[in-house]
Image (tube, rainbow, N blue to C red; front, side, top):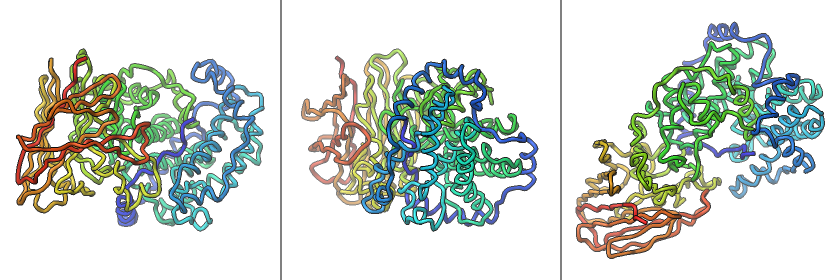
Length: 632
């Protein structure tokens, strides 16, 4: 069972701006009553969730025969003999006292994960043995002070019952309980079913409706352009469509979801780039799919959010963001090794008429609603819009809106060699100060890396975020200018000056002077040249100019081992892959050093920063790194 509580998905300053802007927009934008009536006419008389009620034994027996569900009952039986983990108040309060969020989340994930485990096992086996434990779990969850996560209740107002402001955790639990109620129906006691409804309404549905109607201050996620919007809106609308008996009530939530979800899509660039990274694409776009299917199925196909240019571009990020087979960028707070869900990829490709390489829609892991949504679509996935292709060239994926280029050698080249080059800006969702950074992949290893995110604490989403050496530019392959790291903000950006893409080489040039608050800095341009052919290489050339002499240092980041092999050459080895780095400072003396980035990172190994610093200050100069595979 995956962790049910993905990390908070906004920088502190972005949330403030979004909250303020939401007040300005709210008065001018309300739900169209006629649209609510139109949707009401599309809806069935009775609410419904995904897949099938437990009484449909043929469907559940077919699912039980699927290998993906082979261990569900036995795994649930093992959990059945374990006591329900306690979640005392002091565990919730730990975040406000020490900043630790993982202790509560680990216990909460075990408690809430039982809903999916026991519901699936009971529906597959249909003998009643999982019902008592499931009902005990539901009673315990409904007795909690709040369903909001401690990391999202810094004021403790939810914990103390002073307000109800739904978040990722609350809306996610609402969706799980709603689906459990739909699947098991009257196998659950009447008291339990009433408890589910009263808690979902009080903790999620009623606050959401009050926000939409202007009777309660909007939470930032109502209009935020990233994963929180899709997750909270998707879960809430799904819960309403699954539980509410009133057609008009369900239509209200459907209309609100249809309107609010456009803010999520606005967070993708027109070319479909997801600044939050592939892990948050799984989470955010996965819940966009959940909302899409909830609305499509409830309206008999009359509302299909995927039949939209913006939604399609965002959908294809799961295919276009692959650097080499199975390897994806670790930009932003992405966990190293993250890749798109095979099930979500199969859904996207199936609905767009593309070859997914696998039809792996069915899987038992993760959220109950998501798993059953995908399982029920197996062999029944309608095409929203048929595309002829998803990528412009096998040699590269270019996201000009995000300022990101992925360049590769030819498919038959050995060993495979590729790069991820990043412009962008320093106020992106889950932002790292990383304008101009890059990663280099050789074979199966990201030898020069973006180290990804850190383990989240209270500091991560505070004014002290960039005290972290892995989130600041110190943890990325970018220069230190006059002793200064990169600054934060949307004005710190990489302006694309040149692109020249050919079969032999790709050139990508950035002006990223604005990323540094150094008054004397007059010019800072980084040119990447990715060469294919028999001797592939990446050249990274920085041209810098100051109004007075200043210090200049460039850097590389790796999880591997570093050795000097000459006066101006280093070799970096990770696994079976080795890169040679040739340093050209135009004859200027330099020194290099390596330093472990000692932060609590999400990778198994702590990254190593390689600093390459000129010994004397310069007024202008060109510093180049040539990075090439070492033949075995």
